[in-house]
Length: 498
Image 1: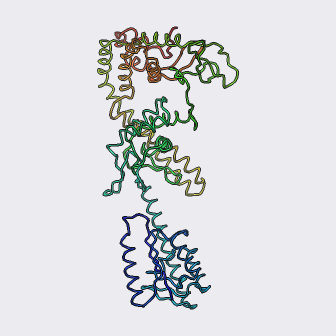
Image 2 (image 1 turned 90 degrees about the horizontal axis):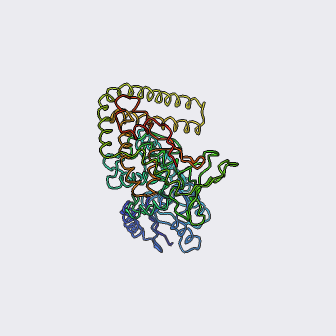
């Protein structure tokens, strides 16, 4: 009688269970020699048997069906099958007489009704072991995610800590990942550009692979970077340190939502394209070239529009320059404004505590809602989808409140630090006028304002930081500041003159 030796290990990774194959072969060959069994082939497989589809297993059955062998030698029945399909094939081959003998050093078998019954039990035990192990692993993963620990591979920018079993920030890659978000948030860079940027900066995934365009999009959409985790459609809070702020993440989602799945490839490099909306209909302002000049007009994609005029790029640039000249601050005046803000910092810190307490009350209300939401879900009053959606909304609000509390604890009143940055940006306005760099002008407007619209060929927009915010604090003191800055401070809607 001719036999096939079949040895299998449970993983495809070369560095795991590799000795298991060698040990099986040695033991099986010694067993065959002792029993004086003829061996016609030895098949080794590095694949789990919990699912059908093993190549070597199919090859072994083909050998048996062709009559090239009459029996199988294996270490244990669980090496042959851990699922009902493969186990059934072995039983069926025995019934057909294609397998006349099964030899196991650790298990007795004879092709009799009793032997087949015992083999069925052995295969059933093997399948039960796999199914039970699967459920235990799933339960462990669910508990791990509830504890705020990601149960899988860490995304790029983080590392799996094998000692603590936690997720740590990758000090080498984290700054590049954060820069990736910051670049995309400007709205000036495509996913393809960022994929090339990752290649230039040698930013690779944790498995050493290049960051492709699809990977960039997944990174930008991954809430893991703001301290949350999405597992099987449900959102959980993570114990890992957030890499970016929720504000930056939300900005990236807005940019991605506006662009859609297909990003337009620009044939011409218009400096102010993507900056403006039409005041009449709300459609985007597009640009085109006529007689060698760049003109801006409404796309009219939202229906009838009253704006019928074209605005030449040079005239739009002059409006922006006029505005920059009005609000620009000299270095001397910048120092005065910053000194005034610094003087108010102490008073701002005293007012911080009440604001923090108010935010903490709101945070506690969110946590109470989360607890009640779980109670409602457990009573089957909500579907799984409704529960997951509402939980995601509440957790997003919770992260927002936590960031605000952290900002107030570190910086005092929230307007103070942005106000400093805003003053410093006004100090750069003069340089922008002198350099006449239209791209940088557009970036400057995006940074200091929002809702940029074109009305009757006039640029209008609202500042992101209300100019009267600081003025309300102490009008008498701030009237001594420079006149251009004071005027800008009082005006809630900037209207540059042509």
